[in-house]
Image (cartoon, rainbow, N blue to C red; front, side, top):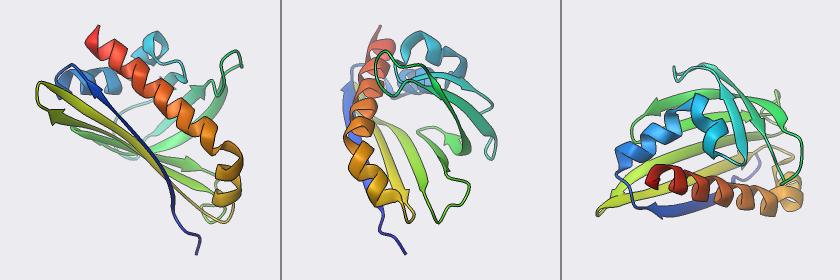
Length: 145
């Protein structure tokens, strides 16, 4: 079995967790604020398939992908995706909005598994982390604005 490789980021947001949650779970609104995941189509019902379009680097065309929503109940949303053969490559991403004084500590993390996880993360890990940071900062701006 392949080890789990994680990428974790967090940001403090000067908005209540329910406000951050409202922005995060407004799937149709991603095009207005998110520079990385520029489109999400689907339902927040557990087990539903979400169709994503992501810009992996500024100036690139959006790339389509599909993930399965595991759960979306405040304060956490969780989806999983990757190769159809999960033993090859799988990612499980969690988004969490936690109260932090007058605001919110937003946390985004993904656990990668599968035979190709180490090689993929060696080549793309820095870019994935940078995109998590872009997502977090854009969510902060949208929730505080």
